[in-house]
Image (tube, rainbow, N blue to C red; front, side, top):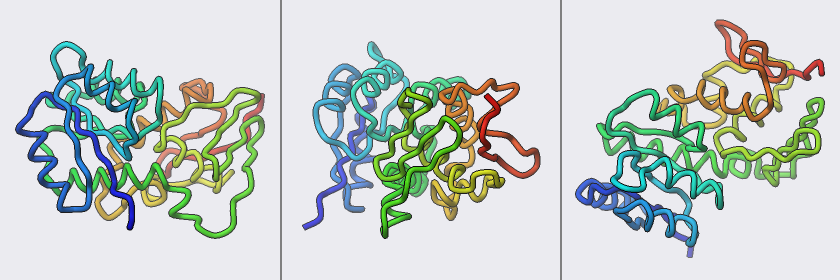
Length: 236
């Protein structure tokens, strides 16, 4: 019997949490809810989850602090909910390691599509390459292992979110060639629902930062205006 996909919802809005649970459970998800930041962070890091849906605005311990605690212990995919819909919330969340964000005005179909995309990105390599194991990809001082999801820059391992790893692997597989935004979305997310495109530039930005790229003159990930992005061997 296949193992249930376990989702933890951390949100002080009990009514919304219940609505999310009621919608997702018939879709095959096992959903648990926590309504306070500290208890949510404890459960998020002490039990196995496939993904976490995390509210930003909570009294006491807010979603950003909960995310910090989660990322200190696990790489479980995290999708953040923001009631205000402000860009600064999305940027801070992605900088801290969130995999996606969703304004609280979401529709149930968009929630499901985004959640499935986040889950797909967390297991993206296995789903897209089920045959023979892929060899390690080397780009200058950067080594990418598609099977273990390990990325090493020089002698230093990089801590990437599933979304960042998916983007990097897609770019590495096309090393030297431009990948359009549409191709990256198709590789890493769900092109039919088009749920990843609003976050893709932010993920590229955080990925560049982790690679040590100067945002004004990046050496690894180049922006090709009007086309997309390109991973190149840096001159360093």
